[in-house]
Image (tube, rainbow, N blue to C red):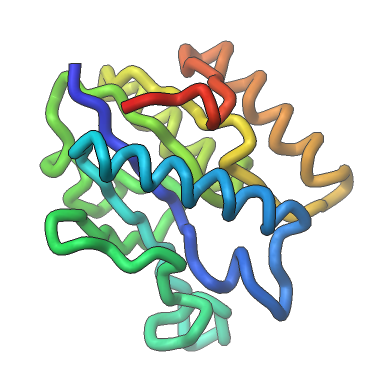
Length: 170
């Protein structure tokens, strides 16, 4: 079975000042290593980029520093720009992934784009490995780590395999 790495919204606005995620340093380290492993294995790699609305001043609007990807994609890697939480919605993502591929999912934000994309992938028949420790979010009514942990429980119940990022191979 082929495995692919989906890096969701790994953009400057999430990981660098002025408002990085609380665990930005740790998550960035995990994402860096996952990407290196996937590249060494020759896996399909898709960088999914959230495209904010310039009309309302979104920090990830096209052309802004926050819209830029943290990792420079290699020529054989894909970049998908999305307008909604589900990375499959309105994009070519389905066509880029081998039908029987397992998907390693990592990135931001746990309760939005990571959750929506994972559920969409499961509904399409993909095996989803959610890289625990390589997805994160901002605090809301509860600490960010609790939000991410609740997403992991929900996705596990939906059929995702929750795996510590450092235990994932390609």
